[in-house]
Image (cartoon, rainbow, N blue to C red; front, top):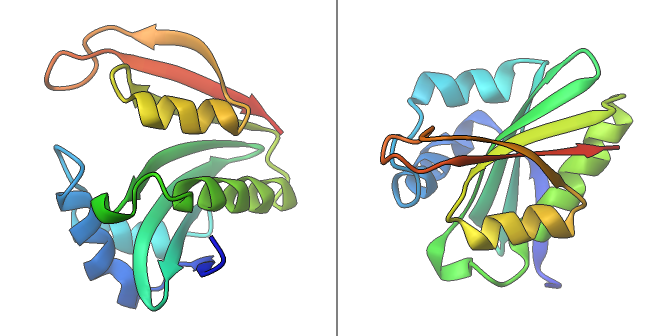
Length: 146
């Protein structure tokens, strides 16, 4: 993964981030939500690039010394190539620098690659939300102490 570049997202990235969402998320976020994700000091949006193309993004929101990771989405053509792992590591490093001590996320119970990614980063399961997603699937609740 020598060609991966990680940086904070800027407003000019929103169209591409939305493309990634529309290929992967059942209920993609609206443009206004991404604008807030990029501009709000309590939120953080990182992108991973291969060459000049955004192939992965992550969004997170902080409250005091805790953080909730909302989405990590990788372009289907780039899945399994390590971009999400590199992005997750960078995100966790930045959160530590911001004084975050605990990170939370939820993931659909059938999303085996995402659960593996989070487990590799050190997240552990602490609960489930039954029928949380619109298709009736459960959410696995995970957390990590930094």
